[in-house]
Amino acid sequence: MNPYYYLFYKLYKLGLSLKVYDSQFSAVGAMTLNLALNLLVIEEVFKINKHISNLYASLLFVILVLLNSVLFLGGKRYNRIKERFDKESKMQRIVGWICVSLYIAFSLTVPLIIC
Image 1: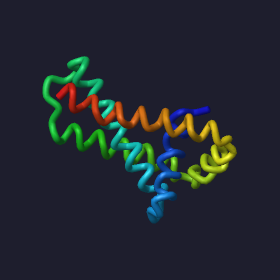
Image 2: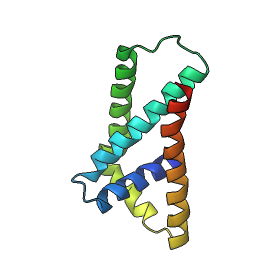
Image 3: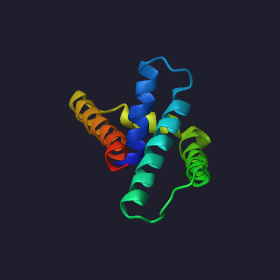
C-alpha cells in the first residue's frame, strides 16, 4: 500500500462525502498544503535555511501543486486509486481514518508549536 495514495484517497472521499464539486482537486490542494507544511517544519527544525522567504514558500507550493496534479490527475489516476481502496473492510476504513486524522492533526499543530 502506498501511504501517499491512501492519504489522497481519504481526502478525496472526505470531499465526496461533503459534496465538494470536483473533490479530486480539493484533495490535491489539501495534500499539497499538508506536504508543504511538513517540508517547511523540517526545514525549520534542521535550520536548513535561516529565513524562509515568501517567494521560496510560494515557489515550493507551486512546484508541489504541479507535481501532485500530474501524479493524481494525470490520466485520471485518482479513479484507479479510488477503485483500489474502495475494497477496504469496515475495520480498515476506521483504522485508516484514525491514522489520517492523527497525521493531519500532527501536521497542523507542530508548526504552531515550533514557530
